[in-house]
Length: 148
Image (cartoon, helix red, strand yellow):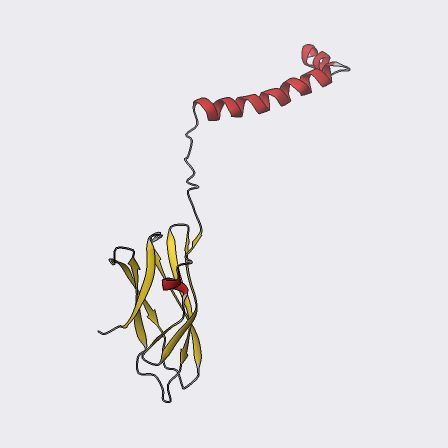
């Protein structure tokens, strides 16, 4: 007990504190390096905005005008966004569409389903549909009616 009292008196307090601090830093580092399991962190995320005219240009399909189009790939998912306007004189009859994303060889890479709903003449809505996958190779789109 007397030995412990001598250790914590005077200048020895600073030395003991420094040794303890050093141990508290070195031991965890040694454990992580030698014994702890390292969990791999996947940071392979890439954000990509498609700028091909065939993707982002406005398009009209059956009196539905698709504008403000974007196709963004982020964190392994691709999202198609657009504003849809009913340009007809009556309420639209097409409420759901497929947006086919087509690569430069003409192959359909994926068909994204989007719900428009009922729109009165000149009424607008926003659509957004997402799929897992990067689809960086697509260069154009084709809009078609979804039929059950």
